[in-house]
Length: 68
Image 1 (cartoon, rainbow, N blue to C red):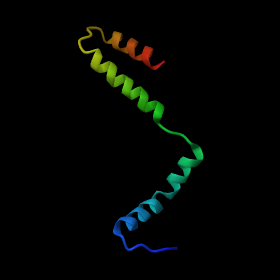
Image 2 (cartoon, rainbow, N blue to C red):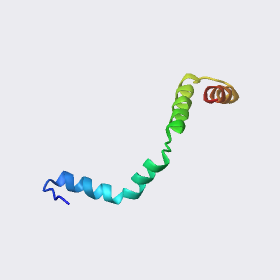
Image 3 (cartoon, rainbow, N blue to C red):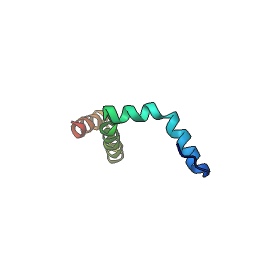
Image 4 (cartoon, one colour):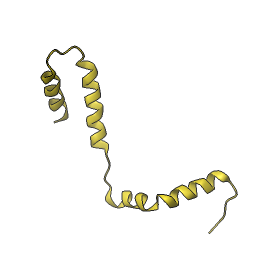
């Protein structure tokens, strides 16, 4: 094992050791939250475009249509 005298490398090593199990689980499962982030982005865009809708059901229908 090599030892570094740079504080940045020491901090990186400490962080990686603290998150070791989670990092390895990420590589094993391959699951991400990308789909959820995409839905959130679409909902935010529709919310900005739907400003002024009188009926909230119209916004809901637009959102369901965009995310399906």
